Image (cartoon, rainbow, N blue to C red; front, top):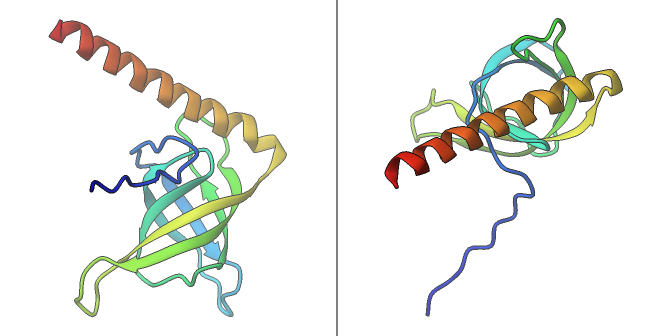
Length: 132
């Protein structure tokens, strides 16, 4: 019997590398880190970190949106964190859920995502037409 995997994601994930600066709120000596996203959606993102982030950790994020004059400020919560290999110094992949987006940043962020989805849809349509 075939098992069907249930898709738990509510929103499409876009493989787009944008710069993120973050600080873990609970750190006793907070240092702002700079990473690039692996993927991004309306409700979260994934990135690579040099250290493990505990599940439930709260992060203050600044996302650098191309074309935006200011970074988008978001609070996120670590949903999962896993080591990429068995090597001692291996980095971690981190899945983050957005818990709060500053009101004045919502339009910038959502417009950016809508533009990405629109452009991706156009590429798929063009590819389909050339195959026909």
